Structure formats: structure tokens, C-alpha cells
Image 1: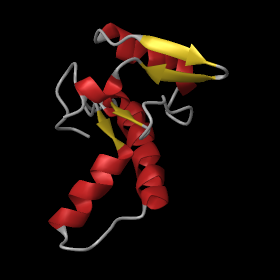
Image 2 (image 1 turned 180 degrees about the vertical axis):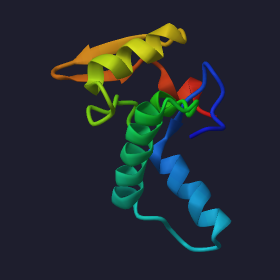
Image 3 (image 1 turned 45 degrees about the horizontal axis):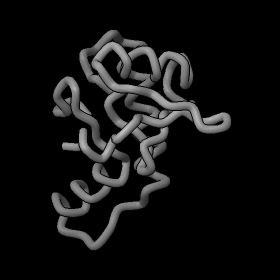
Image 4 (image 1 turned 120 degrees about the vertical axis):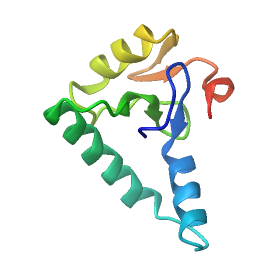
Length: 102
């Protein structure tokens, strides 16, 4: 999460893929990875660290309602970096997120 540059995004699925490669295994549990992404986001917010957790989104481009401040804060942080956020029903998504993935 810390390595994602401003203006770029990463999905939880890509974090899983990278972890599996690093540890020479076939897969990584996306549910467990998602839990740890949320924990990392909360820790970054609580400690004031420079980990840009908001650049990590769900696999379908959706914002994470479990991040500190919920989806509203996630939306504000992404918009500050130039991303366009779309509302579909009750969920929020990054427009054309595939083009911004690292």
C-alpha cells in the first residue's frame, strides 16, 4: 500500500497476487487480505503515518466503507488526487479505475 504513487490505484486482489508471488504460493486469501488492508488503513490513520491506504480499492473499483471515516472520507481523499468518483445505488466507484492501476 505504501508503494502506490499519487494518482495511481491498487486493488486488494493485486495485493493478494503480489503476496502469493513473493511467498511462492499458488494463492492468497482475498478475505484475509481485505481484513489486513482495513487494519493497515486504521493503523495509518490512527498513527498519522504516510501510508496512502485510500489508494487501495476493491477489485471492482468500489470504495471501501470500512476505511477510517467511511466511504465519504475515502471519496474525498481520492478526489483530492484527481480521481472521479461515481455513485451507483448505495456504492461509490472510481471511474475508469482500470486505467489507473499500477
